Image 1 (cartoon, helix red, strand yellow):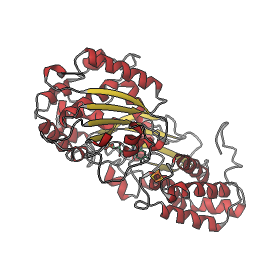
Image 2 (spheres, protein in one colour):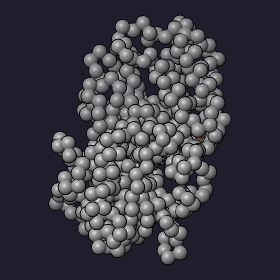
Image 3 (cartoon, rainbow, N blue to C red):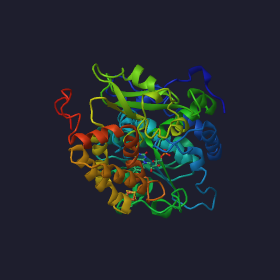
Image 4 (tube, rainbow, N blue to C red):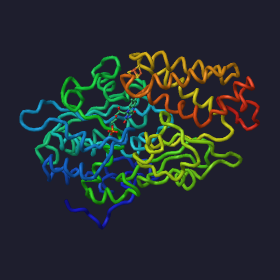
Length: 442
Ligand SMILES: Cc1cc2nc3c(=O)[nH]c(=O)nc-3n(C[C@H](O)[C@H](O)[C@H](O)COP(=O)(O)O)c2cc1C
Ligand code: SF4
């Protein structure tokens, strides 16, 4: 496939975003080359598009980094393939610390829709859904308007752009549970059932929504597709600074000078993101640790700052890229309180299916609260370690519980002294700190 080398953008995902409040509309998107990727795709066969996506090395941006082309290749093709086939955009985004999809949803709804139509064309799918967090009000409103624009401009509906391809898209607002973001729980929820994860196999690619072949991908994953089609797999691979291809919306929250989101090459070192883009720590605060990929990833330390934001490289440091939204812990915030806050959230969001999650996470919260309040015993630390092991991958039905204990298990290693000090002093060493700001939840 020809790559249009001349105008190859360095920030394909965010170049549509301008200060103009109306930057999300079709005319603006088109003025930046919007829907050219779809036009390119429609000149090719579905299998040729799939080959290009495989060649690009795009990995899913929803957390696990599964190769997108490989996932799609499991969907049955050909005249005997079951229909309707479904493609779903996972826009649930309820992970603590994650806010990257919100930017794309609010500012570039057409980019997501274009990616979804390309996905539908590639796999000969019939219906697309955008499953979106219910309280992303602005995004919902804009996506609804963007869908109308598409139907009015023959970008959706029958015989799209004269290609003979028919595709429709519906928006579905989530009832507001974190577990609805797990792809099989999402499918159950979309069917009107309780959002419990499903047993796998069968995988959704073969038997998903209403038993038909279904693909679920993250918002940001879909956003990459128009550009891969437009500029080619070789260009896409050249964007990364390490092994992983493309760019990524990285974020930083916590006590840094300029928290926010930035589109940067895959493989950008963690320290560069925190220092150069988030402006480094606020005056008077030091970096104690950070969760590199959001609230369900293991802590890393200052010594890991040179690690590239690359799925395998972060894995080598025993953490995960996750959503790529870094949560910073400073030296004046109690790590026990931070972990307690996260575990409480995950315990509340358990669907209740498996014992280590349903009973283990609330019990971990009880123990952490006890330690945080200065009422803990050393045996509580051992119990917390045991609870982390019970919730390890393979012991539960889905990845909620294993993810929930990642910050805890790493805090027990890296910040063990803090846990022990709470117990020895029978109080929180951070509580007397004069550095707590009004409204800090300690
Ligand atoms: C508890 C839980 C919540 C999840 N929430 C989301 C979410 O909000 N958005 C998302 O894209 N993936 C989420 N995932 C991952 C999805 O199950 C799925 O792997 C992902 O949507 C696949 O997209 P990708 O291949 O493009 O990464 C969640 C997983 C778990 C276990
Ligand atoms: S790990 Fe938790 S959320 Fe996942 S299936 Fe088990 S109980 Fe439900």
